Length: 185
Image 1 (cartoon, one colour):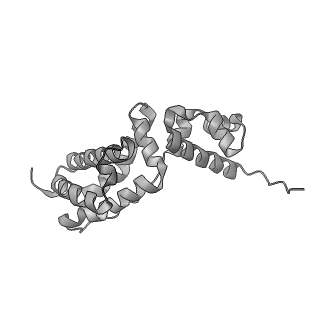
Image 2 (cartoon, rainbow, N blue to C red; image 1 turned 90 degrees about the horizontal axis):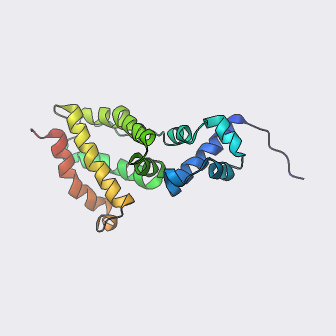
Image 3 (cartoon, rainbow, N blue to C red; image 1 turned 135 degrees about the horizontal axis):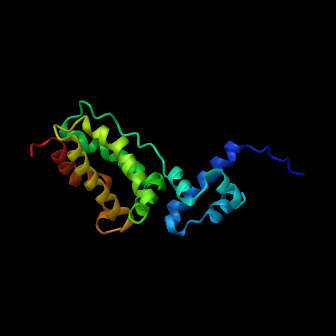
């Protein structure tokens, strides 16, 4: 007879969040349901509602993540892309949370707000360390370049971007990032 596992609210909540992250990443916001997340987590749908209330609240928490952008203080302008891009590739390719958030942000206000929060609290401050002036504008331009790249490569799957190596993308995008952050207007 199998030994019964003790109930743990923390473990149950974590299981629900893991299931939600996987489903939002694989199926997107619109096709993920509270019931499907509950099924994957091995709980009743009422338990998901108990812990998170709404699908929007579940998504907001599941889409919360830390980018761990490296400290750019003292990084030479010509090394910016080589410092930033590997971290971006890691985020885009190893965890579906960011891509799910990006897909959902186009049509969902809560997802867009979460994406804006990540940018305002993690990306913009990191880029400010190397921006020569007008930090907000320069960070926003880098964000537009990077988000455009990730959307085209990973969501729309535009060729030849999909087939380009990381090194090729760094060589192509690097001068633009450097220009946005360090060159005079």
